[in-house]
Amino acid sequence: MVLQSEMYDITIVGAGPVGLYATYYAGLRDCRTKLIEMYPQVGGRLISMYPEKEVFDVAGHPKIVAADLVRLLTEQAMQYRPAVVLHERVTCLRILGERVIELATDRGMHYTQTAIIAVGSGAFVPRKLDIPHLIDLEGHGIYYWLKSFEALRGKKVLIVGGGNSAVDWALSLEGIAAEVTLAHRTYKFQAHEATVDKLLASGVRVKFPYFTLKAVLGEDHVTGAVIWNERSGKEEEIAVDAIVLSIGMLTNLEPFREWGLNIVGSGIAVAPDMSTNMPGVYAAGDIATYPGKILLITAGSGEAATAVNSAKEYILSGDLGR
Ligand SMILES: Cc1cc2nc3c(=O)[nH]c(=O)nc-3n(C[C@H](O)[C@H](O)[C@H](O)COP(=O)(O)OP(=O)(O)OC[C@H]3O[C@@H](n4cnc5c(N)ncnc54)[C@H](O)[C@@H]3O)c2cc1C
Image 1 (cartoon, helix red, strand yellow):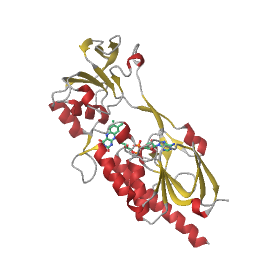
Image 2 (cartoon, helix red, strand yellow; image 1 turned 120 degrees about the horizontal axis):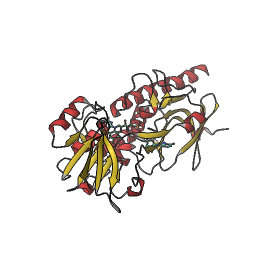
Image 3 (spheres, rainbow, N blue to C red; image 1 turned 135 degrees about the horizontal axis):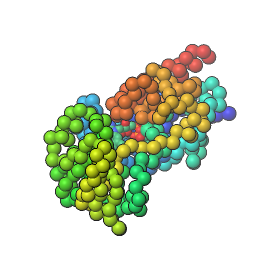
Image 4 (cartoon, protein in one colour; image 1 turned 180 degrees about the vertical axis):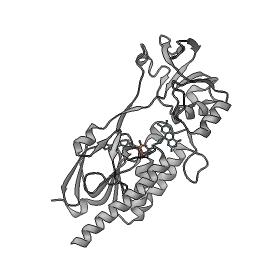
């Protein structure tokens, strides 16, 4: 028997930008709302991976530093006084009955009529390359993301990758690092066209197409890299102090499958109303997938609003049935 006082209308799992926006929107819809985050701080990847990077594609902000965006999202989210639970990882979701969902964390139990899963990529590890010595030099010049640009002031940096993150890192470091090289292995960048144009017009040394990292040089710290052209076989040794591998993330979706959620490709499958295959359970943000999905803060915010509206309708349909 769940006490009424313990029961929330909507519980949002994950306090990244999408979870924060869902929290705001749930308050706006007059829902008793709880937000659960596994880290001691909110903000998701914007804080854990790129707090100093500028974000250019959020509606209404021509440009904004990621940490500032999180500060504003938090202020917006707290307006309707949601319950906020930090430093608790949701480990299990179970449906106990009609509009009764139990969320178990590493510290306790939470009860809710509906849940919105906004966990980003869930548990993830950066994709690595099978190169000798690479793992030994992690923390000694090998990076997978950049929490602070200052550490690379005056250094020579190699960035490996051709997606939005890689191109953004390269442009962010221009003017801070002494020299920036970007190596990309396919014939096309996966980044936004205008950002690629900016990159190609910048002072970044772009090694592309077919270039990737072949070897890392240095004993106790990175001192250089061998990049090679996979088509021609041509190799080039460059002196660098740091290498940023920005070639994607590997995510473990198994826990969500065990909860009973339908996993398709790299996410939880959702219908256009953001509902999952489990009644009362919705997903939004990077973890939600459907045809045409894009992994952007703005897209996730729209999904959050849709998920909250759908959850509210589901709650109201139960009230009408009583
Ligand atoms: C380097 C980089 C640069 C980027 N730049 C941009 C950009 O310029 N513009 C843009 O629009 N997008 C950008 N993105 C993409 C953007 O960061 C994501 O689309 C966005 O963070 C997704 O938000 P989210 O809230 O879904 O997930 P996340 O930001 O990943 O947040 C998920 C939250 O859920 C928490 N969580 C996970 N599992 C649990 C659990 N079991 N229990 C409790 N809490 C849990 C996590 O700790 C995290 O705080 C970038 C991504 C990267 C990696």
